[in-house]
Length: 186
Image 1: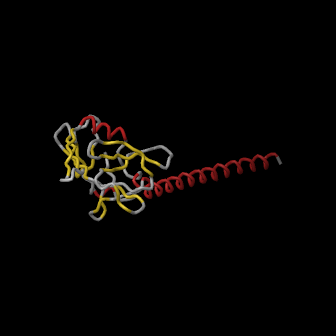
Image 2: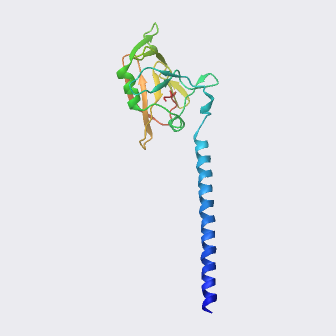
Image 3: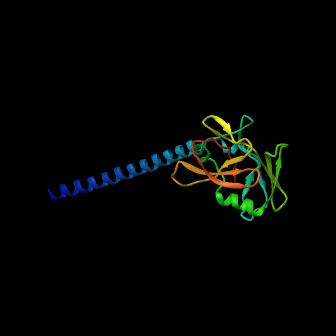
């Protein structure tokens, strides 16, 4: 009888090891697939299409800035922060580096309103920030200001945004539901 009990215990242990190995392998495969699917859903556009052109301004960090605002069907994309955050938008530190290391030249219209800002990097390459305004409650406002979202990890309803107007620039907090244009960095 002892021999039968011993065989039963060995059989149970062997089957338990097989079942555990299969369960762990299945959990691993399921987790991998779920992670892959979630990552695919995080990418709001096909970033592999090489539509975004980046400019090397010669910044000390090596950061490249997109040549223009992100566009969809030829029009500047205005996004609430929750969608903009899915893109590689600049941080406050990256903007401050741009301000510190580049030279800015502002162009105004005949009424003195800001039209665009030329940003010239240490290596002579340049990008332009055009007046974009922002969209609040489905209407565009502040037409003569340059706006764009900045990366913000804080868990608040207001998020960091850049606002450039005639005399200076300011990092301010905007309601995350407003729609602002985005620039990308790499």
